[in-house]
Image (cartoon, rainbow, N blue to C red):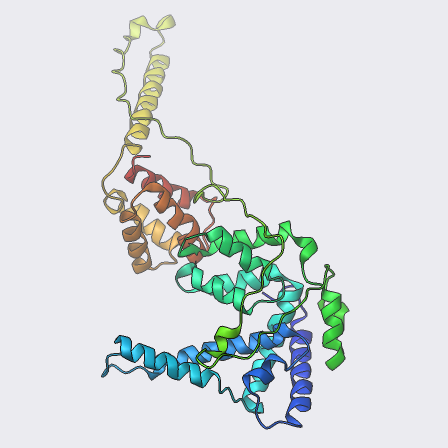
Length: 386
């Protein structure tokens, strides 16, 4: 994530910035409320990342409040708990010792998002559970992202009504959106100047130039029956870009040749006698017959290997199973078995191929151009009669 940064300088600056902000704020305040935090710095993205961290803590505390001895699925309990948590959220009260480390992380995240949005979003997506990016995750990003906010907006539009996509797909869409709208990225120079008003920032050690400032909108006060976090509305994105839909679930850089229908090989002609060979050379005749035999056996074997099968697991020889386990699943038999079971249960080849391309490849860092992945894909193709 930080490969474009001087990590030591980034950490040092974020701590310096957070320390100066806290010095100024807590000189006149003992605690910070939600509205205080929304205006804590002149960089709204930093403020919103702090709120995002508090929201995550708020959700975790709500889950921890639940007990196995009570029915928390009851609609009455759910509503009461929601009202209680909403009231609590409107009473944010954070002391300096809790706020300052959160502010340090929010500052680092903001600088990464500003300078290298590709790395920022890639890291966010790769850290999602089950190697999937859900619609809820994208909605949360839209709520808390202000710098380069067109990225989550574009992904939300590309997802349409899908509940989730695999990590590789979300990364592909985010990189495509950034590449298409490079001129609309937030101006690094503008925001470095704003950072420097609080603590001088050496841009040459951290930054590479892009373009353009962006107007920022600060949310207002929460309503009486509303959660504080629900006041963080999404901002509209001007000139939304339509991401082109990639070919459905196609493995990256892997050529999958069409598989011809199985045709039983024609009966081989009767071999010639030694006296029928040219010049009566018996050794040459034997070599010719052996070569013909090997060619025909290879043809029979090739056609057999392309026949449809009813089960993936039952058509993986023991030596090939060991190869898959060690080369594709890091030596984990359980990971192999779970993946094969999931492929067996796929409704069609497109779904199974998507699991290989977007889930297992990301999870186990496969080389999609390698022969081992190709062998697994060929077996899966036979399972679905491809």
